[in-house]
Image: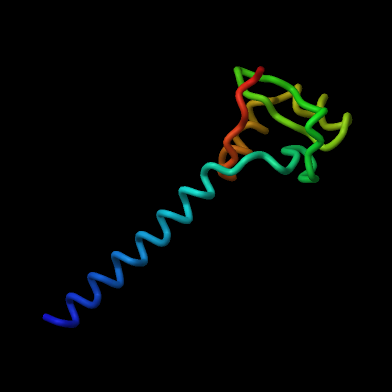
Length: 86
């Protein structure tokens, strides 16, 4: 009975740790360009479907505009919460 209780407590602690780590990951701000992966420049952005996406350089904007959904999904799958378009 004691070992069952120890296992249950250990499992609870492990699940709590994983869930709390995932929650913080899921709400991270965008810091990397979705096209090239470099650090973003807040002066370079595009708005799409109410979301603002930042880029590292001018060359990334046309690539994004060809297929914005792919790049938005890429960021969101990485746990990035995009800002609302202003």
